[in-house]
Image (tube, rainbow, N blue to C red):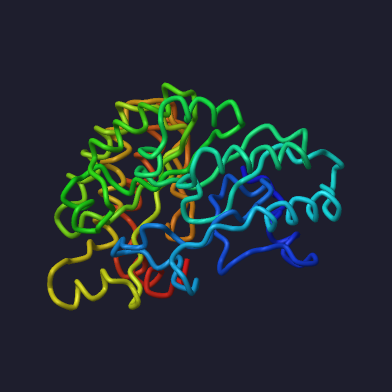
Length: 316
């Protein structure tokens, strides 16, 4: 069952002078959130597979507080939800806004509350290394300020893949930093990248990822399938023979291994554009149904059909 939701970014982007830089990315589940730009680009910008921020002419920019204030003022004055309710959640736009200093994040939260007193929570993308920069006391203060429901692209729990792709952290860092979020009461969601471990290594990567996730408490695990574009550094590695891509069927076998080895209560969704066949459900309740669907795909769908979808997929 899909519920139609308004994308506040698209509604606001055509209004006056809201500040948005390049393509605006947000998780599917943030469709009804107010999208507020506070950073542009990625502080890391070294992952070999990633091309999401190539249209931004600089790697990272912090929005001036004056721009953030102006955007909130404009949103308050110009935007009204169709049902007349107030904005209850804000999603900070940028590759990893949680990298900002705690004081800056708290200042942004204060501005949001000033313009939208009914706003209950603030989410954003975060790298694992962004959490490392915060003390336990700062994480608690940010939770009190409304930060909750961070989205973290862990990609995998396999150290070899993390190192090769230049993610900038190891699997043990995922566990350590997310335990700190658990302690602070900050909820979080994971993105898993099916295919990141490469040909012949996918199912091991899935087991390693499940091992990490089973130690933690993510609310959502969203699975995206690796799609390699010519402007990605990973494409060059493939041309040099340093890395081989999984077949599409291998990716579904990998995804099956991940689901089969997850033993925590979590909402699982493979629903983004990179997934040719959307799959979602609540674990462990729907595990049998999800595995059944994955088995049917593996057994019945032709590699050529799935490959055709992948090769004709426009930029995500």
